[in-house]
Amino acid sequence: MSKEKAIATPNKTKQILEKYDFSFKKSLGQNFLIDVNILENIIKHAGIDQRCGVIEIGPGIGALTEQLAKAADRVLAFEIDQRLIPVLEDTLSEYSNVTIRNEDILKANIKEVIPDYFKKDQPIKVVANLPYYITTPILMKLLMERLPIQDLTVMIQKEVADRMSAKPGTKDYGSLSVAVQYFTEPQVVMNVPKSVFMPKPKVDSAVLHLKMRSTPPVHVKDETFFFDLVQACFAQRRKTIMNNLARHFQPQMNKDTIRETLLKAGIEPGRRGETLTIKEYAGLSNLFYDQIKAR
Ligand code: SAM
Image (tube, rainbow, N blue to C red; front, side, top):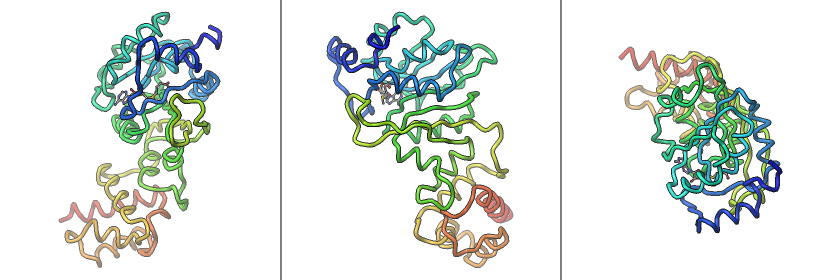
């Protein structure tokens, strides 16, 4: 198909929107892509080929879905907005390898439906231009559910992409960086201008590639406890780790025990949360876990 005929052009998009008298819902984060070159780049960074199965979140009017259908073996897309279902049936009618589910991705049982749509042992990837208002909940759900996927390539708010991929000691590093890096190896692969969306979003965008780790980079005794502790250490960014942990663990633990546990983990109590590596967080979490469990 020529690029002019693709859905992702300003003219074709306008035509589709007019035909269906479609009005954007800001509350659903509807900013559609109108640039085929950007889509081709996303697909290149996602490493999609004809063997791949792809899960897409929020197909909109099908701009990205169409390119995925051409590049991959099959595509399963979850769209919450019921008004878009007849539109997609029309715009993607040429592609027999696409299935659209009218479902909220946050409520969907993805793991359960995967065997219905994909071949056994087929490499599965997630590719999406995500609705920005729920980027983090969507990504955390996909990661925590340990889906049988190779990687995720997602267009998200640039600021969030920077936080997810941030290294210790930087201003962007926080509990989100630790959580995402526990499950994946993240890399910002593209910065994307506002001009390639209709309507234009207020914020800058970036494409983040998240390669799933086969095993976490550190051993933690209890994941929920670990994530809670990391979050607590960043609760007040300007405060020391000692103060943040005291707020979190008192009165269960007193300040002396907290200080001793920090020192036992080799961590100076005056340090701030943003200086600790994921390995240091894991060690700390395991020691605090033992302390709490021993009670
Ligand atoms: N993929 C299209 C594109 O690139 O042009 C549209 C992307 S738009 C940023 C986000 C899409 O996600 C919209 O179609 C919106 O209706 C849909 N969406 C929003 N919240 C959703 C949810 N909870 N579950 C599934 N889809 C959702």
